[in-house]
Every structure is written in C-alpha cells, then in structure tokens.
Length: 283
Image 1 (cartoon, rainbow, N blue to C red):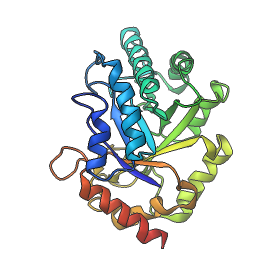
Image 2 (tube, helix red, strand yellow; image 1 turned 90 degrees about the vertical axis):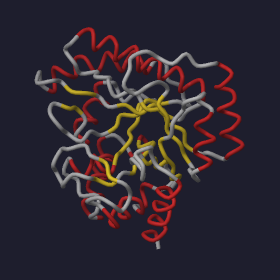
Image 3 (spheres, rainbow, N blue to C red; image 1 turned 180 degrees about the horizontal axis):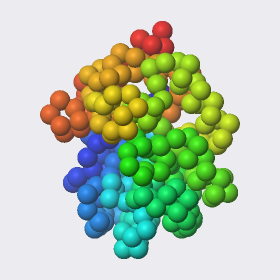
Image 4 (spheres, one colour; image 1 turned 135 degrees about the horizontal axis):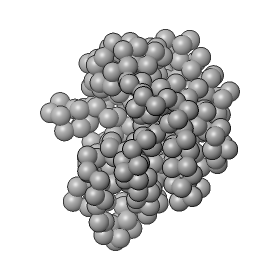
C-alpha cells in the first residue's frame, strides 16, 4: 500500500513532490488550482517536466489530482454545469501533463431533481472529459458521504454511472474510508467491508479500483456527514486498520486528506501513524 497525502502545490506544481518527500509520503494528491475558485492556475509547462523528474527521483508511486470542490456534474443549473465541465477538463489536462495516474472527482448533487435527472447531465459531462484521458491518466469517481441529493453514495449508484458510460476503459473508482463509514458501510468490520468490495467487484470490477482516501471520521456511522478526523482520533480509531489491511486493497495509492495537527494538512506524524497502523493490522 502506497501511503501518502494530499499536499499543497503552491509555488509550482512540482513543489508537491518536495512536500511529499518531507513528510515521508509514498503517494501524493494535489489540486491543480485553488479548490474553491473557478479560475484555473496558469502553470509553467516546465514545471510538468520537473514534476515527472522529481517523482522518479523520489520514488513516488501513485499520483492523483483532485477536481475542485465547486464542481457539480448533476446540476440542472446550466452555468454551474458549464463551469464544472470546463474545470474538470482543465484538471485532466494538467494531470496528463504531470503524468498523474488519476483525476479524482465527486459526481455532485442533483439538487432535488432526482437521480435519473442528474444522470442526464452527468453522463454527457463525463463523456467529454474521458476523451482527454489516456491509459496513464484515468478519471476516478469517488464515493460520496451521501448528504442531500449527492450522487455516488453507494456502489450501486457508481455502477449505474459506469454502465451508462459503457464501462469506459479509463473510468475507475476511488474509495474513501470516511465516506463509506458515514454512508452506512462499516469499514471497521471485516465482513461488512468484504461485502462492499464483493459488490464493487461484481458490479464494476476490482481492477477499476485505482485509489483510496484514508480518513478517520468525525461523524457517527450512517450520519451522511462528511467530516474527516485525523488518524486514530475519530470514530474509526484503531479499527481503521481493518480497511488498511484488507488484502484486496493492497498495492493501491492510499492518500490521507486529514487536517493534521495545525489544520495545514497531513504531516509526517500523520503519515507515520498510518504506516504503523497498517503494519499492526497486517500482522
């Protein structure tokens, strides 16, 4: 398992590799622009080459880019929809530039219009962006916490999108431990986690599972509240190790999105806690 972290890309996207090395990360995730603004960052193309070189030198295995939080591909609002698609296209283009393995995104919310109505927007949006993907850089749907009208709260919903897109060869999945927990999948119970992975394997195929988000939860089980906690400090605690040690989840980039001790993101201690937890449960 390639235990790593979401890190800042400020000062040049290649700086993310430097920050990952500083905290002992084995994989890395970045925003390619401000996560709360539509305007894309004007990257220096030379920074893409530096990113690739530094990644090889540092031995960073998995690289993910995360779409901005503003995106909503299920919205009936035409302006929001247009901006969302343009933003995801830009993120995917930058991801290709740096050689990222995947672009992680949240499908969004149908805002009360219903799941099927939301899919009428989601499918053509993703069709456009998938045209930009390569065998190296995939689109990865992330399971949601399930609040409001969000789409992707279950494997069944993600599988429906995958089917509507014809099982596109460059469309995959990213599973978040916290989101699973708050949407009613007990990742601290080996049997319950295996049921979830069996469903994923049957509906989509485990080979489409390309990345993990490793987060403790600051919200109760099945609460549908997306609240991350630092490792060992939330509802999952020590038993987050069940998720980390599942045999079918080994070998994947496992990225922390925790706040860290000073709300600046995961630090070296968060990474080490997670590595130690992984080892304890594997043994």
